[in-house]
Length: 376
Length: 157
Image 1 (tube, chains in turn cyan, yellow):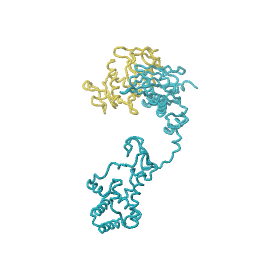
Image 2 (cartoon, helix red, strand yellow):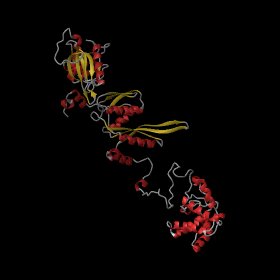
Image 3 (spheres, helix red, strand yellow):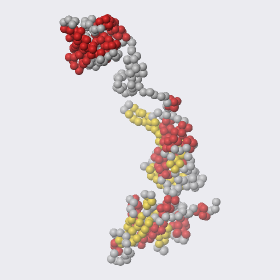
Image 4 (cartoon, chains in turn blue, yellow):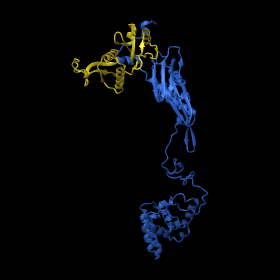
């Protein structure tokens, strides 16, 4: 209601309030003496007319005053209406508040009120009233937010609002307790081996020490560029093989735009996530031979006797090292794309069939000739 | 002895294993019967039974000139863990080129060495030989024990 005038935003800098009160002090004194409200508004017309949104009640009160001033019939009519108005207000406001209300009401020009009434709903101004007294040199810290970026208002900016911590009436402020762990941790992606192993052990459930002691080898490290209209965007690709040299391996791919290090880290991470066991014969070579086709890669791998060594493609060599395969021979035909070779070989290793399974399928019993014919 | 018939036999079995068919029929001939028996002994197929075109015979039926044209040999195929027990079946001697193995070659093959162009035996793999004198199809390990030679027919794994 009329209270809004007293709590008006931004327009009312210190200067204005002082002026307003200085002009209305006389009225206030009069009120005190007479215990009757406001005289005519002719005194106030020289002062600033402050346009504000007004409620119906306010307008009604103004109309009463208008009638009172315009009629100019005499002081007898005006007091009746005014006293009625005061009595009406007394029901809702304390006497101190009443006084301030009356001061406020006295400031308003009745002609303006009429005009606003004529406008109807359009009377609500969408623009803040101009402040002719201020030179905008000072900024009220409580009422005005610092304007840092354009379109700063009500979620129109693409980033969250800057909270006004000094204002008394801000409900959107949330209490935040400082999380010590997050503040202490550095926000970089790069981590030490120890951190990696700890985090991965939580994720996978494997022992952290086991992860720490894995054999890690990036096989493919290349720089790939994404072509855009504005130029090339470099992207780093790393393929890492991870193994415990005891029959468990994992292949992982990592990609990053930041650099090769983060890509390698991601690859290491993914490789550990993809750890799988693979069967070996006598813990040194593959079970028999296999011919495996993976996309355009044709692998012809053959088991080798003890002491033979790894006489294979360099990518397959790394994987064998990680897996703990010590003897192997074979050839890669058609495509020798390192990524495909690596993936194909790992897939082929996992698809090996043990002699137990084969015998079970055929319904045959297995006899180890080494143990039958030779005594160890 | 027709290698073309044998080729057809191998191809048919391979096709059937690719689509997980339980029983198939092949022509009822001496060669097919010998080959099927060899596979059965090694445990690659579950059953052999005589039958007609429609299906295996529940009660035994004599083969007569009247019903000879409708006679078929029914084989039961084996599967384990969604995969066929017969992973691969292929000819060694083809209609265009026969592979005659001597006793030494037979023994070499049986012990896992490479003989000519024949790739070495893998774990759980069998090669079948036809001994021409006795006109029987035998597995290579048995042939090596008995000091036999013959024509390499097909290999299964």
